[in-house]
Amino acid sequence: MKSSDPVVTRFKERFGDEILSVEEFRGQVAISVKSARVLDILRALRDDAECPFDMLADLTAVDYLRLDHPERFAVVYQLYSLLRNERIRIKAYVGEARCEIESAQALWGDANWLEREVWDLYGIRFLNHPDLRRILMPDNYTGHPLRKDYPLKGRGERSNFPKYTVEEPS
Amino acid sequence: MGLEKILGDGVLATRVSALVNWARQNALWPMPFGTACCAIEMMATLSSRFDMSRFGSEVIRFSPRQADLMIVSGRISIKMMPVLLKIWEQMPEPKWCISMGACASSGGVFDTYTLIQGVDQFIPVDVYIPGCPPRPENLIDGVRKIQEIVSKEKISDTKHGS
Ligand code: SF4
Image (cartoon, rainbow over the protein chains, first blue to last red):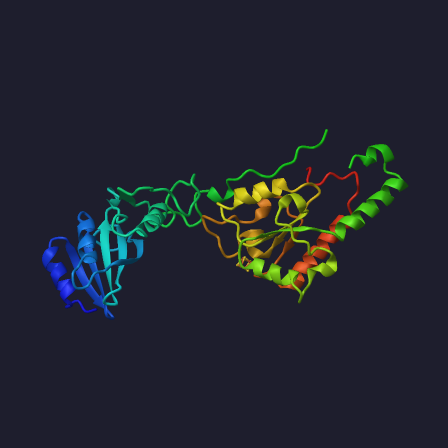
């Protein structure tokens, strides 16, 4: 898809204030947006008349700690249009202080687990998510290990288990 | 076994333990704790080409209550460790443990927040098998080492008591 595609043009007209940048790289379009109205943005793309992006192929996040980006985190939505065989990428920037964004669970059911994963590993809270629990790390884990400032070797979680002992028969 | 109280440490006790050890060492029932790529090598060891049954330990038990040899083959994450501990506790004494591969023995290349850096920190390991993954021959060698350990036990020993 080109960034001159009518879907992108229509999108720019409608959400001009929300858009931070539109990039095209090797036939892929990526649109960076602010996170406040992300749900409207995603709904508009999903319900587009000509090119409905009806499938959420992936939802993930990036930590841009100490890099030159509008905010520290970006939640990335990879959308796919089954009808037109086109893909588009939406990046919604989320700040560190208010680390939350609307859940896309109401639009695509598969966002449920993907958002749990992002919450688990990056600590980005999804508002109105029906069941925001950890999905990969143990339930009693503290911290969000894919953040760039999380120590690689953890904070002692890996040595925090009781040693197996046997009581001597008396 | 409690026999030593009756028999003492004399000739009879030695002969009884030789008999018991002979029976035990040639009928090890492994509990496979295969969590990663090393488990594939373990399966190869068990199947016809390498055929661990030649050494009397082909009866894989998926119930820890029926097993006496734990083979930890693969990475153990912090979410898996409580499971491993529980299964180890469920195995009846006497029991032995093989830590198979670099990951189970030391964490291997995965020096990260989520991986146990060697299961021997939490459960007693008798034999370590190096390699990533170890060849089936190495695993067979490990089982032979366990058999050696078993053959040297006395009936007055309490396993893993210390
Ligand atoms: S030691 Fe190598 S083969 Fe075995 S589990 Fe680790 S990475 Fe896989």
